[in-house]
Image 1 (cartoon, rainbow, N blue to C red):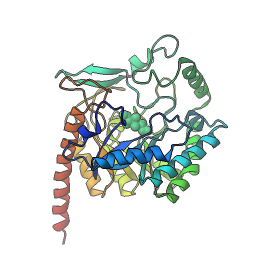
Image 2: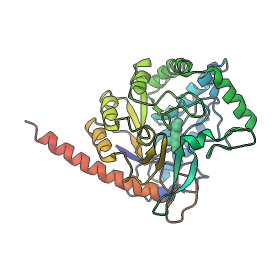
Image 3: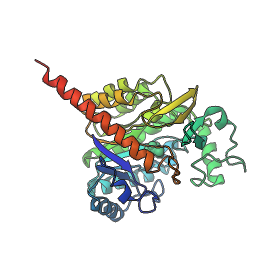
Image 4: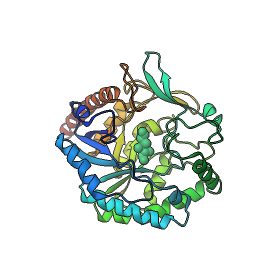
Length: 353
Ligand code: DNO
């Protein structure tokens, strides 16, 4: 696997130079964050990002993410134009040599949390989620804003999207996902790009919005909709692991065994009760990351892996979940797990008759 981290571009308070000092780091994932969903990405800006990354002796190894517009997820007429733009972006990404594209199909909001600064017993700060607290937010009515997403939609836009989804249940969302995949996967395949669908975070319906990419059966259904190797997954342990019913190493063996995991996010969560969890340091929490790494090694996974979110520690301020220090610690822990799993796998291969 290739150890990577997310960099939000030249405005990121975590400078690329600092990320490059993490000993095991080989790659960077980033995106053109200011291009609106539905518009196509300019190739010259992608080339400049690549030059900056390569100047630090790192690889631009994945795009995270090319966002899917709401009209595509809702199945509105503009989706045709938006899907054309999406395909143009995939072609541009491929031309600058990036071969993995992460995306999600969550209505309105991407990852959802109720607190961005939950104090953990050791004094560090983490993101957390509680379903009851979420349902109390009166979004966009001059009332609550969803932590992390206040700036993404104006209150009027938000109301418009929330109202539009009243007509889109899970069945319709699946149909719209199928339409999207049938349009873009052939283009990705022709350009040597592996699409990596990120699971819903958290993996259940929020605020009455449908969410469908939540468990093993759903992930298999996604893959079966278009049976091309270019139609694959971002396997995110933190998202799927918030539901303790998900058997993560088993899922890695199932989908990795089919060669359909193209990108991995490895982080941990403390599950506090039904639909209630807090993020935590990588070695703590309910997820056995050692077993997950072992399953990845045994299924021959060779793509990018990142530590995903970290806590805020040692007084660091910045983008919630995306400080430097805890992500660096997490990556070092993952590198240790990987080294142990690789040696064990090599030993067991040699002991075969
Ligand atoms: C959270 C990330 C997600 C992810 C998107 C992929 O920090 O894991 O925002 O990038 O869901 O489209």
